Length: 233
Image (cartoon, rainbow, N blue to C red; front, side, top):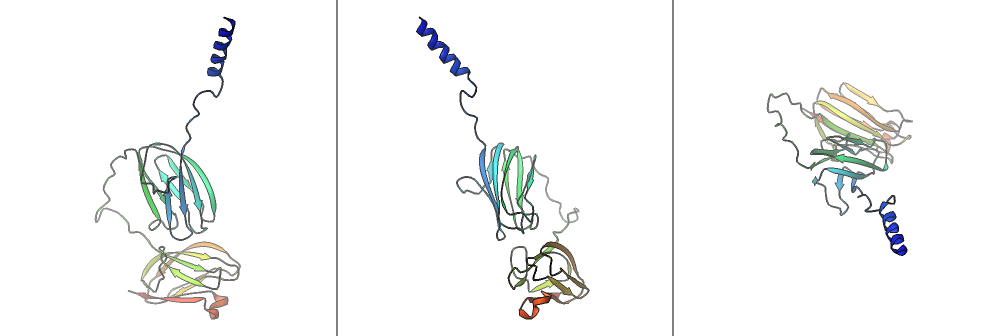
């Protein structure tokens, strides 16, 4: 009888001990990547692109491979982002509810973005039609000087720019070396970074007249660090 009582007592103690029973479920892990080129992805542990998820808690490991891009996740109850100058890995724990979520690069939101749904999103109102008050996406260009002896003018998708139309542009200037600078000149416009500067700036460039848009590194223009694009109507 005494042995039976001891056995029952041990069983009760085991059931009531702290931490006994099933371990809490771990959050599902997802993997986001941005860069080093003009790409941004969100995948599950098997490498599949994420398009639909169940509401719940997720652990998202983001690998930011470029100091020119960001990884920004936003949606109902979630707003997480890396910084432009940051490179490396960061992990976020987020709780998804019913809705649509977007991941994008804040510097290149029109070309580097993706979406997925969680649960059952509510119906969204249709986009405004002609005359509905919608505004056009600003035109964007990317100027990169260095770190080697090269300077380029490209679209956010990475295509070299040979001609541009008159109008106003958002120009992202990437000065990648303290040996170089970035200089842009066009009819009615003239702006440059300093040689010691290294970093990223955003300029508003208004091309009001036809002609030539020139971009160059002043100290090394004779070494081939120069280019141009034709400004058309």
